[in-house]
Length: 379
Image (cartoon, rainbow, N blue to C red):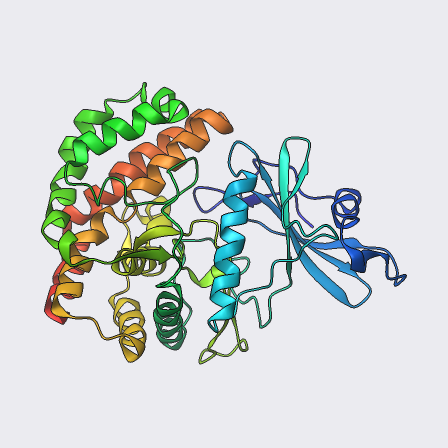
């Protein structure tokens, strides 16, 4: 197993967090009843290449579980417990997500030193995209169609999850700014309430940049807010967060993974995130100096979604308005994470310049404008 993980570009990099060791996994799993079943010892068989937490598959006999570790500066016990409640809600309504396992005392979060741990059943199906960076597209249009159907079913199941929105924090998504009547005031309050983010943004002319590059797009969302229904969403609908029925190009979605960015937003905001994650090759800027968009994947994703939940003209208009700023609040949370949690000045600058501002700038250019025009023709 390599010690390198995915970075902010196309190259593998050293991880932010040390990988989970077999000894560490055994100490965590000692809290679970099945670990004392007398069938051999537990050992790590795979470590995730995702960079912002540590995760591993751990085998004991014929049982394989998924162990994930978070630093408390990124995820708290309360935050994880809310995610686990959401996972149970989805499972009760027929969405296939891996079961969260509980200790002998009924806890689903284990605290150890400065970390919190969660343990899940291993996912069913083929983890076809597990080594693929989060900005790479689907390998086939059929995968995009199936992912669209699965997202619509996910949204239907999540509609009655009644928990309030989670307050923004490092590595989190929300609609605190894009859903506000006064986005500039919302930004100011967000920064004032998050001291790590405030420290991170001190080095940038962030209010001026926000007003120049982001506010014009955010203001286009405002007329649509009255028609949007608040609900819990996934927040990171990418091919790598899904498992598949086979390795075939016509495989269908088996299970949904990773609710770590779930929050109360809007279904069309989540759909905009899915388009951005799966149809725009943001990492291509390192190779070609531009970002390509695959409009075929956009259509396939939306076609699949509409097979389950047809989109109204108002939905499509809101989707177009949200797409250029769907990244905004997660990008801000990345700036906070890189500056205040892992102290990477290079990644802080990259998250600010290329992600927070760069994504919005792209929609002013020819490829971004073409994508928005494509969606307008669809609706």
